Structure formats: C-alpha cells, structure tokens
Image (cartoon, rainbow, N blue to C red):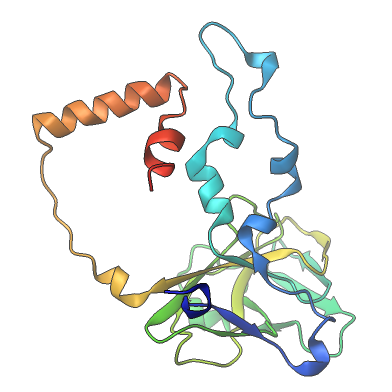
Length: 234
C-alpha cells in the first residue's frame, strides 16, 4: 500500500472558517508545555535507591499524549461558574455558536450533577474511511482544569456532519477564559472490527508468571525495557 492509499482521517470546515478557527493537529505536535519543559531525570531526587526518572521517560504516558489528533477550541470562550457549579454562563466573540446547553434530565443520576450538562460546538466535520470510527475523549494527561468533555464514539464514515461535545464545568466558582486553540478533544480513529477482539479470563501459567516477573524487574531497574523491547521491535 502506497502512502497515498493509506487510510486517512479528514477534517473539513466551511470555506469562510478556514484559517479563522483553530485547526486540528496530530496529537504528537500538541504536547503540553509542562511536558516539553520536564527533564527526563530529576537530579534533585537522584539517589542510590531512586533513579529519579520522570514521566518524560514513561512510554505509556507519552504514547497516550501522542495518540490520534487534537481538536482544539475553535474560538476563545469565557465561562462564568456560580452557585457551587450549578450555574454556568458562557460568552464568546465569534459569529458562530460556541456553547449551548443540554437538559439536566438527559443525565439524571450522573455523578457530576447538580452541575449542568453543557455543549461545546465544533465547526469541523470529521470523515474516516469505510469501517472506521472515532473515539472522542478529553485530551489524555492534559486536563485544562475548567471543563471536561464527555467521551463518545461516532461512526465517522457514515455520520459526516458536525459533532458537538457535551461537557461539565469542573472548576470552582469563578470567571475563566479558555483561549482559542486550547486542546479540547483527543480524536482517536480506529477500525470498528478491532473492537470485536475476543478474550479469555484465566490463571497465568508458570512460564507467563516468570515472564511477568522478568519484565517487572527490568522495568523497575530503570533500563528502559519497554522502550527497547516493546516499542523498538515493532
């Protein structure tokens, strides 16, 4: 399969919005500033019993940050949270709707209640090849501290229209500004058939237990086992 034949995800916007609203980017290009600044080793905590490795050296953490695409906030939104989170008012300086409300009865019993369910409006249509869907989740390992998107899956090979994102305001009472370009949603395309992988539940064999212990010891020793053995051999 040539690169041009490889499955692709497409993000489409209205012609008047191109170059105006914040554009989606591969998640690997949207690593948070705190992570970029973080040293791989915290020398202040280096000792004979602590290798002082930070999450900069944790491949599972990094893989989560880099998975899929980041769909950013299209335009700057102001959020006023009051009454212990029960009142959420929003505003924006943009000629298209950025936030609207869901009815509380739609999520009766949700742990976030009495905080009301709201909805961020997305202005990108997302298309995937036949048989592919998208998982939409809050950006992994980079919460914004103000709102949290509710996760969802959409068959983006069939539903080729705008997808808006329910959210709850999670911050304490106050006035907040989410700037244009703030990472809003992490988009992870996947083949729907991959979700049908069968599974088993059983006790491990002695050989599997020995392998688990070997990997655990190598990982605990800080020799980069996962990076060298699990990733670089793919």
